[in-house]
Length: 398
Image (cartoon, rainbow, N blue to C red):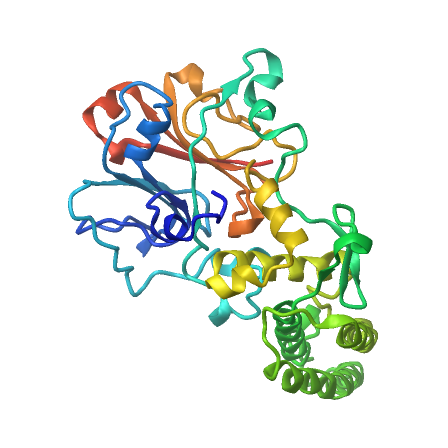
């Protein structure tokens, strides 16, 4: 959904992520812990767009869950469309992706910073044809709807230079896309986390030696890392103080952008030789990913944050988000039709119906396997009986 109708954006009941509307229904669990909700579908909205397959109810709210750490379990709950209330998440719900949080949760720089709920992105439903021959049958023919250039949002860029976004899809000479202060804050949080880990005994395999062993090499490494941390810390503190006085949704601007770029380069030169690698500072691509995460957060955040997004970025997001998924356009969010079968047998051949497919999608921090899809399958008999507990879940990797 494009955020052009603010009331609809805030009130729609069909969305990726967010908190589901379950009423008093029991929250599904996996290995004794509550699962995470990845989508809620208002079946009345689906019916108005055109039911994707026979037997799907025309009312009620379907909530889809998975175990985000193991990717081995999923569940579906149906909430009757009668005085629905927002679910109260269990207190013991784990953080997203468990031990893999750092590579999956953009912007989270320690375990306590990792979220417990996926970002919420409202959905629209658009009927689409599918090709039915060969490998192409897994690719919905959406070009007639979105245009041949529509695909997943990456906003790939050659880098952030002097506070301006200079990338493949943007034309700075026409409408520069500046680097927001919010993205700089993400990078600083990551740098602070990196320094903390750098000082840990077990970081990168540097362990305390046995009592009777030569400790010189260990002591040398510890001293070198302590020196690197002491050199980088004042740079971090200086920027923390400056950013406190800035609107996080406003661009750094050319002058501060140049200073930030220079200081980030300096921190990399200090930390990297000693094993302190900045996730958002390894190169221009990862630096751009911090800005991308910040812009997605702004798009889904307060109205004021949304309106602060530069027009070139907002236009890009609104155009590209029309087609879901990761990169190729072959993996999409869909109900019904042919599911993507990348590493497994064809589920349709087993008489299963694709209830829902959710693709890897960086806007809402979805990563299934190796950029694959999460799928929920059901038989026609179980669908007719409303046996949602018999839904079959699987992740097929990219």
